Image (tube, rainbow, N blue to C red; front, top):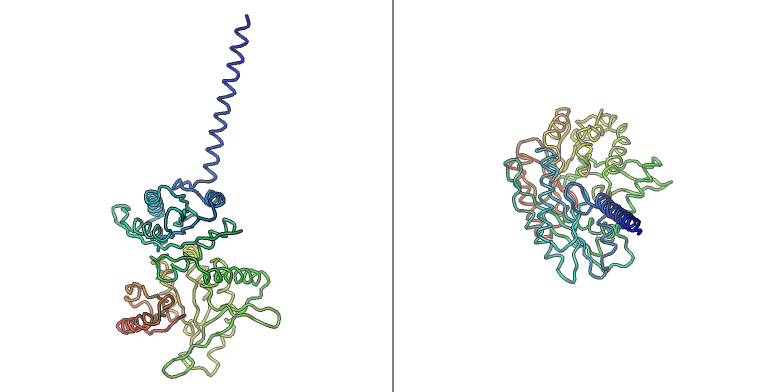
Length: 404
């Protein structure tokens, strides 16, 4: 009798059910959009942090990967080529570790979560490095990119996902600083370094906000004669009647904008003194050394923010030191800017590591190389220094030493 009412009820329930299905699908789509990287489909930062939060703490290892000198790909071949390299690398990581959680933090930075009950993180890192090192075809060219990897594993206690990722990032930075194409594991000494960096960065940020930055000078001495031949400009943080020297900005500061600001502030402080330098009884070859920060963006270099640091200085009294990475970021632009500073009288120095490609200095664009042998044992350090001195002499370059 009321069959039509029953049909209507069933029809209504069916429509409601389809509405629910559509809502579930839409929620899934939105959830994927907020937790997945649009280029690679991998988990993004939010997705990774959630995955870390639900992973058993007792068996969690985090691998932080970064392609070596990837910025040079973007700057020489274009961003489309860079995106192709990133997407290809993502697929390789997934094929290598199909059972693991894989994510991309942005740029060329990837994270892999490894269950230590099933695999050795170091063995996994070696396998990933080998897969990533295989050539990638881009626009008819074969590119070979190595990767640096930082490993962090427990025991974890109350660390947040952000803090866990930060520990792996510190291990990655150690791998980069030791020459790249390396695997480094987070350790107690790196934990102390992480805490130190966080404290220094916070203090520098406060110093910027309160204009408490000033400049100090570290004398540079000719080891053969004992004569003072220059001074390195060293930023210091002034706190009342005391001041604290920022020994090594590249090591201490994580944020590139802070690094740039601190360097520029120190040079501004020394500018009035430098303008009167010719009136003082100093040797004709006395020079200040400005170390331009490597860990700044290519945009900061191209936009002139870094070169504005040396604007209006008597450059015949200055040595401008840059890292090899800065040349990799923007080879053409960096050369043009440095050549201009050299024409104005500046002496140019290239800071190099043990693994430097000497073609970077073979064209006569530099007057000096500054050797950094950190990460090497005493025997290797001596051998590398000897080899560097011999090579530098062939190119007519002066050799100085950086941190050892």
